[in-house]
Each structure stands twice: as C-alpha cells, then as structure tokens.
Image (cartoon, rainbow, N blue to C red; front, side):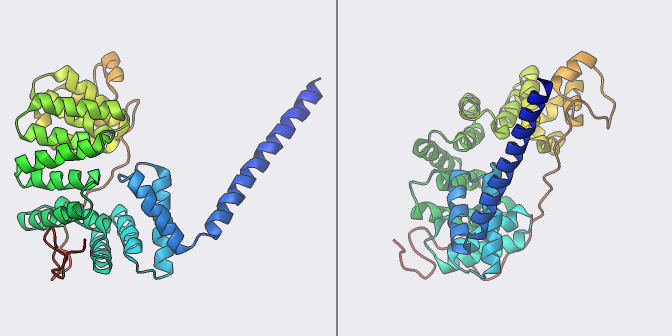
Length: 327
C-alpha cells in the first residue's frame, strides 16, 4: 500500500514538473515569435488598463516592448513612448523626457506621450515647468476629452499651480468619466482638501479605498487628514495599513507637515521603524533602528530634477505645434 501511494506521488510530481516545463516552453515560444511592433502594442494596451504599472504583467510588457523596439531601432510614436516609460521606471528621467518629446514629434495627436511628458514635467516642479506641464496636459485633454486619466493628470498640475477651481472641475470630470478608478477619486480628495472641504476630501479618499483596498495612497492621504484633525488613533490605523501596502511611504512620512502632530507619538515612531501597530500595542516600546515583525519595503529612490531638452514647447490646446488643428 505504501509503495502504491509512493508511486502515485512520484507520478504526480513528475506530471507537475512536465506541466511547468510545458508552460515555460509555451511562454518562450510566444516571446520568441514576438515582433517589436506587437510587443509595443501589447505594452501600450497593458498601460491603458494599468497606468500606474501596479501589475507585474504590465511591467514585463513595458520592459519587453522597450527592449525589442530599441533593439529594432523602431521609431514610431508608440515605441518611443514605451521606451520613455521604461526609462522613467529605471530613474533615467533625461532619456525618458527625450523619448516622450520624440514621440510627440512623430505624432502630435498621440495623447499618451503628451500625458506622460506633462506628468514628468509636473513632478519636476518649478513655476516654469508647471506652466509647461499644464499646457501639455491641456493639449492631451483636448486630444482625448473622454480619457479620465488625462483629466486627472491635468487636475494634479492645476492644483500645484493653485488654480483650485479649475482643478476641481477637472477632477470631478475624471471621476464622472471613470467612476471605478480609485486614483481619480484619490486625486479629487486632494483637490477638495486644498479647497478647504475636509469632509468631501475624506469621502473621496474613503471611496477610493472602497474601490481598491490594496491602494496605499488614499489610505495615507486620509491618515494625513485625520492627523491634522487631531484624530490620532484613526491616523495611526490608516498609516499602519498604508505602510503595509507600500513600505516606501515611510521614507517621507517624518518630514510630512500633515503628520507633524504624530512625531512625538511612540506608535508613530514604531510604524516608521517597520513595526506594525499590533506588535507595538503588545510590546509598547521600540528600540531606535530596530526591526519588528514587518520590514520596510525597499526604497523607491528619490528623483532629482533635471533640465530637459532646450527649444521645445508644448502646443496650446486646440492647435498642434505647427499651428494647425490635429482634429
């Protein structure tokens, strides 16, 4: 009987190995037959569904599309855009910006490249960069007015520029266009908070969390709001969840002015050290520099502003760079 069971286990194990090999072979054949243009199309489609590159499949598709198109010296707008996304992921902002500009030169009506370029410039900051980013994102919206992500990106830059009424209008339109997008609701929360509507902001953050409990930013933003309101326990609970989902958020938390009311709280220090709230409540003290039952995620790294290509500018909404409407 034992021998029979053993033989069955051996057969099942061998079958499992064969199945894994077969899957790997199919995957290899698919990649081996992948053309650069097809890889770029698949990467572009994946980004439409997962613009934040949260899924491993999206990151793999972008990496493959960029690698194959670079190797083939493919210079279509779509290929240059995918290459720019990959360079940005790797932290090479200068090459990313160059690729985005090149993509818009190839096709001035290609909204994804304008969107990526505007967001990149907006993150670099500075009044001149923000103005340039706003023009670029307004152009992207004019190209695809029904694209929620373009509206949301435009709202982000408008908020940074202090144009809050316009930002709120764009953020609300983004939510209306895609009610199931938690990022759009999170962005709406940021705008409402800047407008002095904490209740509306809290509702927007909560709705983003309800749509996708695995997104860290709405949880972190609501924690900041609760800390400012003096609701310390609520803020700590939310931060605990946010840090579990994205440990890199710990890096900027000590310098976040919204979290200043928590700086002297031992539970907050425990969360920053990598402990979770349950561990702290059981043990009560934390040794500086220690490590608890949860370890911080690897650092996402900081990105320093770089100068972009000179002599290039964004078209005004409603006209192309050459002065004639694209559509």
